[in-house]
Length: 120
Image 1 (spheres, one colour):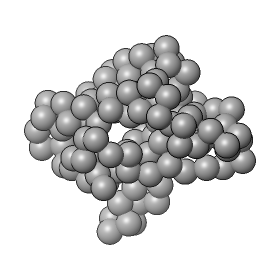
Image 2 (cartoon, one colour; image 1 turned 60 degrees about the vertical axis):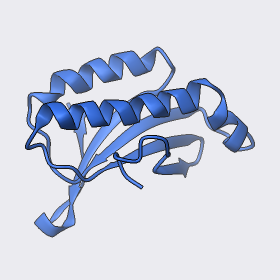
Image 3 (cartoon, helix red, strand yellow; image 1 turned 90 degrees about the horizontal axis):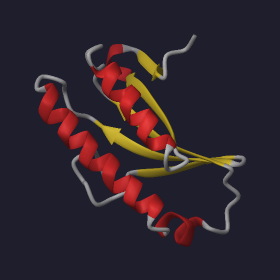
Image 4 (tube, one colour; image 1 turned 120 degrees about the horizontal axis):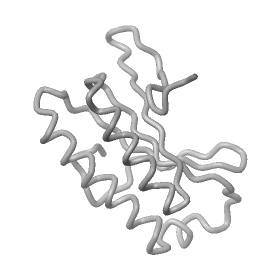
């Protein structure tokens, strides 16, 4: 599954008392507007999955104090995306969802690196 599979959750990852709803994004940033539109559609489906209770129905037996929507990118986004990521983070806080973006590209030797929110 990937960012293109709008109606599917790509991955759910658990760690102790937290959980990550993971979007796997392999697209290039050649057309930033189209890429962002696709990513937003996927994120909106994840919000719906969380808000309508489907997440709790499927995973309710697991302890989960922190839920994060995590985007894992194959291609590093342009810095112009930081504002959009900031707006997404603020919007997701209204649903009690954390938001993180990672970049990983093993073929370029890049291990999973958090790129948003910026590490201070």
